[in-house]
Amino acid sequence: MAEKRIIISNPGSDNMGASFRVLIEALEQIETIESEDSIIIDLSQITFVYPFLILPLCALIENISNSQERVEYGFGDTTGTYLNTIKFPFGFDAITTENWNDYLLNYRDRTYLPICQIPVAENTTLVREKLLTTFENIALHQLEITGQMISVIKYLISEAIDNIVDHANVSNSWIMIQNYPTKGFLDICIVDTGLGILGSYKSFNVPDINSDAEALTQAINGNSTKQITETRGYGIDTSRQMLVDGLRGKYFLFPGSAFYIYTSELEQITSLSGSNNWKGTMLALRIPCEVPERFDYTAFLE
Image (tube, rainbow, N blue to C red; front, side, top):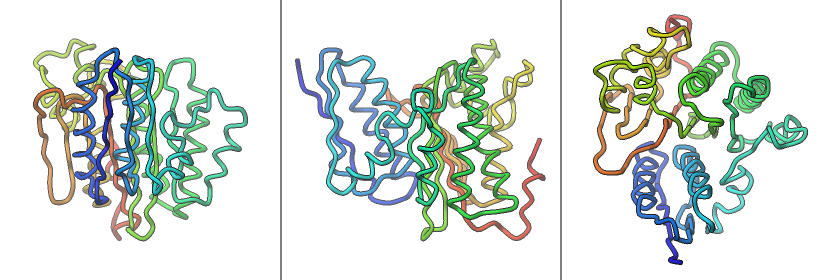
């Protein structure tokens, strides 16, 4: 049995691109794993944890753990305690946790919520709705926000989770929230390992969409499967405009072998080469704490 060490680099900054580059490095290393390997996930270089990196790592680790007999983790002294507190690597699971609501309330006065598994199977609707309501309310309490931002955060989260329920064909997804009061923004990351946007189009036999980049192009322009079925669509167009055009935040979407970034300075879709792809969909939202004076979230609703 060979030992395979997956080294997770330190992002070095809170820039979204820095975390994404480290994630790509991890994906490249994970592609080299063979079935008989003994795996060590080495996070000892990380000095600070960002949702845009640590949450997708959780999804990757669960997949590795399901296929490998032996998986170990190495933490540095700087982040080890925090990683344990946020329930790394498998997250908080309301399905298997008694009195889970009371447990989450322990985070009401912190600047973060734990990594949380969100059940998305058909028979988990009640638990999912209660869990998301509790999760959102605690986050809003932490931020001490009122007015339109309450509706914005609930909309962005619920729209993303609804998309997973309707389209991803998985049993659970992940969410993580971290507030940075001194930096003036809130990070939300939502991840699944399901069909992805291209896979969803293909499942409905949508013609002339043959790559992840083409699927992204269609989705961000509002051409979703809701035009074909009675289910909810991806809602990407509404969410990205509300966040970026309205709040001047940042929107990042990574399904398969292409990613989409939208900020007030940049909008582009980039295709990745080789095996650097996300098997499912990763969504990263950076939400400014300060609301522009004339912002009206209802102007962006479909």
